[in-house]
Length: 72
Image (cartoon, rainbow, N blue to C red; front, side, top):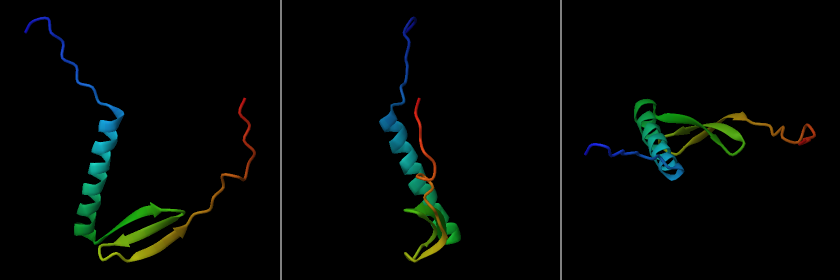
């Protein structure tokens, strides 16, 4: 009707839910096409294969405590 304004809101919950679903679907497609995905798992970058095998590509180093943090 004339004069009515329809606004659609995207909540944080909606955004998180949709992005998680998209990531799952993309991972499934990558497994189908390439047979593996590369992802961060804990403090490592790994290649995860369709059969569940994990190959560590890089061991990450935590540098979060290397420098003092001063908040002003």
